[in-house]
Image (cartoon, rainbow, N blue to C red; front, top):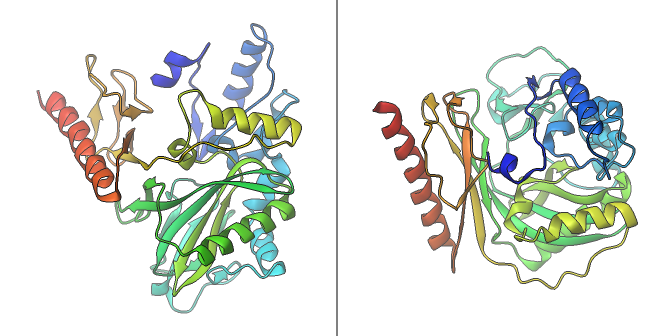
Length: 338
């Protein structure tokens, strides 16, 4: 709802599996082109798993990584081969055979985002497109959000990542992040080195992020997100400075000098504990975003909205996030029960 309010024009298209319906997207863009002149196409995770659609959209100026980069990053065989080539650590993977000890492995689907394609490996599974298996490591999950020009990187910030078990099939749904993480300078330098290496290997451009795990004091790469990630919101300003930086580096290869002070911020995804209907009159607090439309039906364990908080220390911020999540859920439950 908030996106529609700020956009010049907005249209909702159907989803197809983990991406968008190709036909509806192309039809909608064609109708928009009859009304507006596009300076370029800026995309997010909705196209990350569908690079063919990115090729089919008739807009020449793509503000972000190419479709070929998306394909390569999301191809497990290619991605882990690149990591091995540059001696970048990662948890063990099985790409063509099942691991022997199922309990210590996870099944992952590269065609899903937000942790919805990650589940426990409890029995033998048939190999299908985008599926691979990765050894489960216990440790600290964190990410590095950075901006790249194809050769060099400019770090934006390190983030501690949160996950939430929604059900047996979704034990690691993305739940949010805070832009503060307990890492040594050496561990941060290691993550920055890996980001720099992968930027040159993939010719990454614009805002990207890499997910890591710190296990036994060793930094390992989990995933590369070759597009604007959710964590960029922890650093974005009301003036849209980061989006402007993203557009600038994608079009000119030049970085914008960063002199802004990073404030302690966190965001979280509020998931529906049961199916709810958004009431006609619902007062959304200013600390919410990605708000659903009135009368929208939100199924159990599906996202309701995003919430944000900032403060002086982590305990305060995490407390605010928990309190605000409770407020949203209670208000929706009350209106639905009445």
